[in-house]
Image (cartoon, rainbow over all chains, first blue to last red; front, side, top):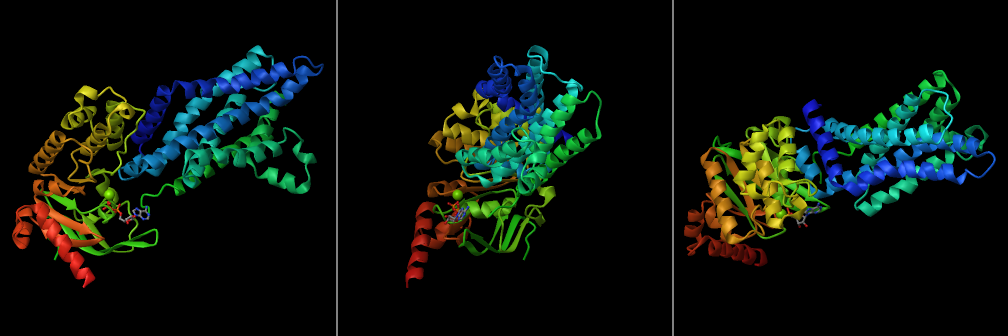
Length: 248
Length: 244
Ligand SMILES: Nc1ncnc2c1ncn2[C@@H]1O[C@H](COP(=O)(O)OP(=O)(O)O)[C@@H](O)[C@H]1O
Ligand SMILES: [Mg+2]
């Protein structure tokens, strides 16, 4: 790994994004708009504050995860299809440079995205959070990186952008259903509970709930964060395995 | 019979792609400091051979030696410049952003990026988005990237396809200036009338090397008026041989 090359990749990905105003607008605004919508939906009901508090924090990690997954899978698919990947791998470019470059660039976007979303929900919409706000951000950014890493990985198995986009419902929706947002995980049927135990989003949602309910750092939160970071690292390693210098 | 004056030495190379034998058993070499043309009809295996030389092609057997090292060795990645057949540059970045990015990857100065743009005569378009350029201009951006860092070996896959005659002549002029400066060039083309612009030729058809040598030697061998008809005579000869 060479910091100069990693930095070049991250800078290039961000420069490409800057050119694409619509995507930047979507990346930054969509999660906040959806959270605003959620708040508005429950505005009329008696238990409005409680419901928003229940759904708000988990969604703060789900949205960045989905958005980053989509953007990365399409971007890296283009890189594979256009021949630039072949060219880069014929240059003195380490696989880690490429993967980390992408992770850093999209991690930075994730930071801006969750900064806006957290600012909106905690600052304006009075979402009740007992723990530190930076911990919310940390979980959210780690999830954005996880989404990036998974997007990199699946781009190896798609031949068109259309196929890449189809991976989103297949990989993300089951995690969303089983992560504890709709049914608490300990009341799930045994088999589903076991499945949800190995899905990274379950830990992300749990981490958000820990931050929300506890004013102090908990051991569970440490475990959750370690699992999310470990999953992101694992997905990056799988992604690295799909980058082949020699192809058929 | 390894030759000191060969920048590339290919021995008994066999490549199978998607179940098809593309190169059954290829042996050839690329002379150092010269412009070697890799010619032949489409589908003949030019890109496959080029990919093997650059070290991005999975091969079945045989050896490919580049600048004294096995093809694809890590030390070669900065000494070999490669232009893929389709322009591999970023359409959503400007010409100079593309060049500056690849210059950073290679660790060469931003000044080299400007120099490479000048070499391919795109200085007037340095600020334009690559995606908005014509296809000929795009392929020159891709060529400029390969020039960065003055690699010892330049491997160019059909760099002149789709260019007008004036630009083609200018690019061949550039190739010969680079060779005069000590760089080795391997340039593929399916357009036979580019043959006379090369110092040496490799004629590849259906994965077989039909001829290897200087344009003059090939003309004399077939008693043809120009290299193009010499090639056609050789191809026809090979075809008749295959049929009889
Ligand atoms: N990725 C691939 N998978 C399977 N076969 C391929 C692939 N790429 C090229 N081929 C086949 O290999 C043969 C040689 O192709 P290529 O090296 O591209 O020839 P050229 O560059 O001379 O036109 C062709 O028959 C082509 O169909
Ligand atoms: Mg070709």
